[in-house]
Length: 156
Image 1 (cartoon, one colour):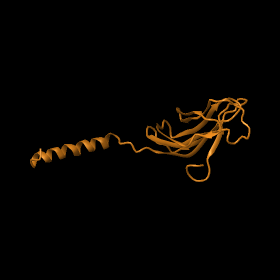
Image 2 (cartoon, rainbow, N blue to C red):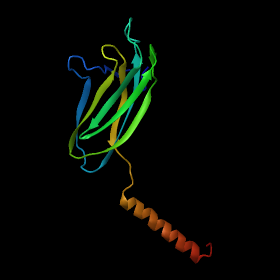
Image 3 (cartoon, one colour):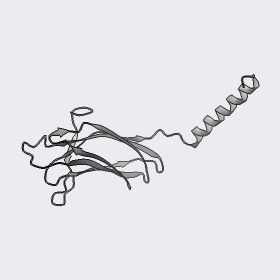
Image 4 (cartoon, rainbow, N blue to C red):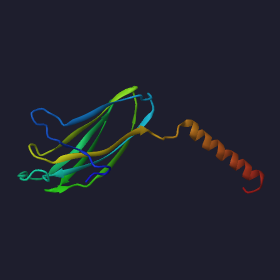
């Protein structure tokens, strides 16, 4: 049932007695102003773990993901009774605002008091490969020289 390896994280998205299902880690060694690509696999399971589930649809499940002060949401819903949504992959680019930032995942869902359960797997955060202005300038310069050379040898 996992997308990579043998293990995945599962959380109930209900806020029960004021307790949120939050998982987080402090990421250090970041370069301020540089983009970082976050990707993860996620899904939802409704009443598959619990033997008796008396709730009525719609079942909603998802994650709020934060990296420093930036937040994004993924939502799954409605999910059919006694089913698994299937794995989905989420990818986004975040910019580091400090050399150390917290990456966190907050499970959310409903209806209150019963699953759906939010599933999380294959989390990856790496420096993004986005061409900067020098790369674009280099491409433009190479194009200009090739046009000039084509004109010189009579191809244009």
